[in-house]
Length: 250
Image (cartoon, rainbow, N blue to C red; front, top):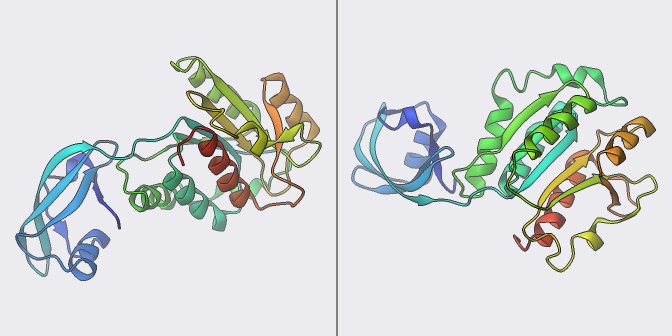
């Protein structure tokens, strides 16, 4: 953990010894009473926490906020549901990269059973997002949305874009079937500065022609990542990284 994150309502409560955060602070960081550690409020301020008391059962701390820590970047993802075993890794990685929103969607070629994954219900998806924020030493966690189909997903994103203050929005469809250009060309030399980017990546079987038409009708540019066929999670991380480079964020 590069920062220990708490929900707002946890700041006034002792940290139980069964909590992974307690175990990290005591067993990995070797902190004792009177020591401090980096902490933050989820989607709030970062600062220092001072250990007031420490027993084998609980840790009591005082939190002193000081600043915002590593806010999110103007990137929205639309992602065809990947295999559940990939999903938590994908969420962790894009959270660590700092995207604002992830819209997981059913697709025409995607495996329908993936939509019934219990990762969200049992909190594993949220934990993946938190793990990414902790890795990035950020207090900000991306928003996660779920959609049954691509039409609903695109409409949800468009509704949000109508409320944005960004004057420039770049819509990018990643596809290895007849791409119009290479994403590296669009995102070179800081060309995406002061731009909000929407990046769409398909599930493991890709997009149908019908779905491609939906994207093009909404103004998406069809971009490629080269000739190799990538896993969904690999394409997402590569695509986001190139866009962030085009924003001069990395």
